[in-house]
Each structure stands twice: as C-alpha cells, then as structure tokens.
Amino acid sequence: MPLVTLKQILDEAAKGGYGVGAFNVNNMEQIQGIFKAAQELESPLIIQASFNAVKYAGLKFLQHLMKAATETYPDVPVALHLDHGPDFDRCKTCIELGFTSVMIDGSLDYSSKEKKKPARSFEDNVAVTKQVVDYSHQFGVSVEGELGTLGGIEDEASAQKVMLTDPEQANAFVEQTGVDALAVAIGTSHGAYKFKEKPIIDIERVKTIHEKIPNTPLVMHGSSSVPMELTEKLNTFIVVSKGKDDEGGPYIDFLGKKYYIDQDYSIARDMVYDLFFKNRLKKTMGVPIESIQMGIRNGVRKINVDTDGRLMVTTAILEVLYSQPEKFDPRDYLEPSREAIYNMVKGKILAFGSAGRSKDYKPKSLKRMKKVYEK
Ligand code: G3H
Ligand code: 13P
Ligand code: ZN
Image (tube, rainbow, N blue to C red; front, side, top):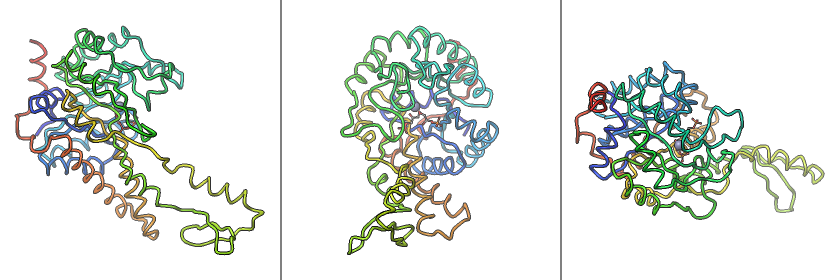
C-alpha cells in the first residue's frame, strides 16, 4: 500500500468516530515496532518525524526506512507527516522527500534567535500557514496548522502564558488558510512534565471548537499519558543509592556493592548522589486515556504521542543494561526497545478505536488528492 494522506486518514476517522495515533520516530526500531502493531491490529497509522528527527536520522535514511516499512507492511494505510514544521522551506523539503503531510507550526516564530520563541500574531500565523497550504495542495499533500500555544516545547513562548485556542478564531483560521487539520491548545503540553497533581484538559473547549468547525479534524498534541508504573519502573534502575547500616554508618550502594563513607565525606557523598540522580524522573502526570477518549468523542482525530515512546524505549534498554551488565551487543537491548514500542502502540490503537479500520477504505493517491483540491 502506498503512503496515504493525513486528510484521507482523518476524514475516514471522522466518519468512523475514532482517533488515530500519530507516533514520533527517529530510528529503525521505533518504525518497525509501530508498523508491526498497526499491521497486527489492522489499524491506519500516522508516522511523524520532527525536523530534529529528520536531522538526526538523515533525510535519505528516514525516507528509505519509511519505504522499507511500507513494503514490509503493505496492508497498513500510513501517512508520513512532518511534526511541528517550523517554516515554509522545511515543509517544502519534506514534501520533496515524499512526506504525504506536513504540519506548519505557525503559532510560534521559530526564526527568532530568542531561546523563548515569541508567539506569532494571528495574521502572521494565517499568512505562513496559507503559504504552506497553497504549496502543499498542488501536490495533494495535506497540511496541519496550529492555533494557540501548548506548554512544553512551546511554553518557551515569550509571553510565558499558554494561550488556549479561541473557538471563534479557529473558525476564521480554517476559513482563511484551508488547513486539513487543526492542532488545538486545550491544556496539554509536550514532554514528561505535564501536570503536577491533577490533569486539567479543557474538553468543553474542544466541544465548542468542534461545533464551530465540524468538518476539520482536530489534533491533540502532548498526548502522552506518562504512566506512573512506567516512571516508577524507570526510577528503579538505580546506579547509586545511599543508606545507613544497622549502626548508622552511611554508605553508598554502587551497583549492589556498599562503599562505606566517613561522616566527614558526607558532602562528597551527596555530590556523587546528586550526580547520578539528577536526571531521574520526578513525580509527574500525563494525559489520562479517558481524557483522550473524551476528546475523540468531540472531534479529536489525530493524537500525538512521542514522550511515552521515549520512556518505553529507555526503560527497556535500561532494564537490559542494569540486569545484564555483561551485555554489549546493541541487539540485546534494541530488540527489547522495539518490543516495548510495539506493545505501547498496540495499547494506544485499542484505546483510540482505530483497530480493525485499515480495510475500510481504498487509499487515494497524491495525484487523486491533488484533483480533490483543484475542485
Ligand atoms: O513535539 C515535539 C516532538 O516531541 C518532537 O520533539 O523536536 O525533540 O524531535 P523533537
Ligand atoms: P508528548 O510529548 O506528550 O508525547 O507529545 C508529542 C507531540 O505532541 C508531538 O508533536
Ligand atoms: Zn506537538
């Protein structure tokens, strides 16, 4: 099956009332794990690469990995999508490379030298998004736009306040740009640290936006659930811990061996401890699956997941390296990482309702989609 467009995948999802997972990839194992899950559950799929991923893997490598995947898993209708395209030129590069869909993230000005990227005005967002839409549709390629700012990667926005999507503006934005899908800011954010206590997702806002633009599939970014059992598991792979023996003598446990330390060295001990621990995950909460399902019932069709995959991969690799420190063949830890992604994606496909939908429709070629836009 050839790559299909995002528009077709999301329009079909809207007809069927389900959501489709959009999974970020950077390497071969992720791609293989995700495709295997989609094939097995007969689900359509969106594979997305950020421009950072394109830079990491290399343009040609990513292109050919995708080609290999579509040949190996011919029954999976899949859109190859650019995630958070920062500007027109980079969207164009990806289209030339064979992506069937691009996101132009016009909500922020990525050209700014500031670390905290300033939010773009509505007018500027419309202008750059329309430029990408006009270009992409000539080739049948779909476009996702974004209105509002999310937290996470985008809370670097200079205003420092998250701007939730205004439903009236969403209507005007879609009319003026012609985007095929719209990413909305409803309280989610990117990365592992989304909510400290209780997730607050503005489902009412999703509902209102959907009422205003019922024919535009909505996209939920920052949709990783960051499951507590996973972060807890990740935190068990402890290289160093500190403790006290029965007599109160302090020690550092380094990979299961106790090193006793004189009280005088407590500063050094704490320093070593901090050194090994500062990157472990703090307590955090992600987006509950039930909130995503509520979103799906109210017009969300594309659900972006990157962080959960990253956590899965890292946990799987650490588990091998920690329990079998003698292993040094990359296959010994990359194979479990591929399996972990596969299991995660299976779970998401079932939760989003896209299982069993891959044979519902015939894929439309880019040529055909081009005609659709010409009408
Ligand atoms: O939303 C952004 C994605 O998680 C991609 O992140 O630019 O580090 O690849 P990245
Ligand atoms: P997470 O960081 O929640 O996985 O979100 C990913 C995303 O929105 C990619 O565009
Ligand atoms: Zn995103």
